[in-house]
Structure formats: structure tokens, C-alpha cells
Image 1 (cartoon, helix red, strand yellow):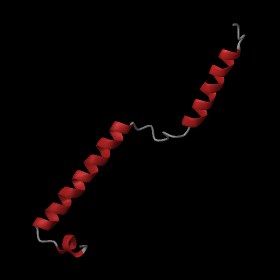
Image 2 (image 1 turned 180 degrees about the vertical axis):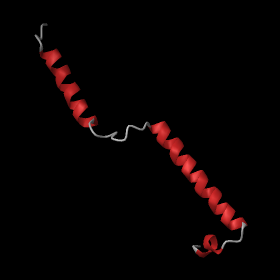
Image 3 (image 1 turned 180 degrees about the horizontal axis):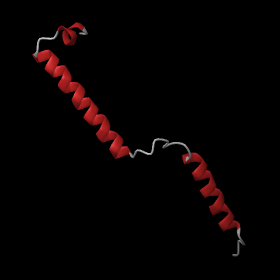
Image 4 (image 1 turned 90 degrees about the vertical axis):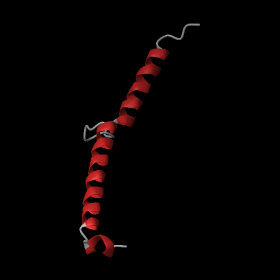
Length: 65
């Protein structure tokens, strides 16, 4: 039941494959939660600006319909 160092070699091979697969995916360094919070904040600002334009009687908000 001895496998020599095959198990260790397979483990190293799997680690290299995983490292190569994940390389370059997160280039910005921003985590998923921070990105989601940032996007949500931007969308809230856009919605507030659109509501303000709509309440002020701005024709730009209605022209795109």
C-alpha cells in the first residue's frame, strides 16, 4: 500500500493548477463585498439625482422614456 511520493507530487501539481487558474482574476484588489457596496452607493446617488430632476420638473428625465 505504499505509493511513494505520488501523493505529494499530485498535491503540488493540483496547487500549481489552482494558482494558475486564479491568477489575474482579481487585478484590482477590491473584495466582492466592497465592490458591491460601492456599486450600491453609486446606484443610490444616480437614483437620488433622477428623483431630484423629476421633482424639479426637469424635462431630461422624461425625455428618455
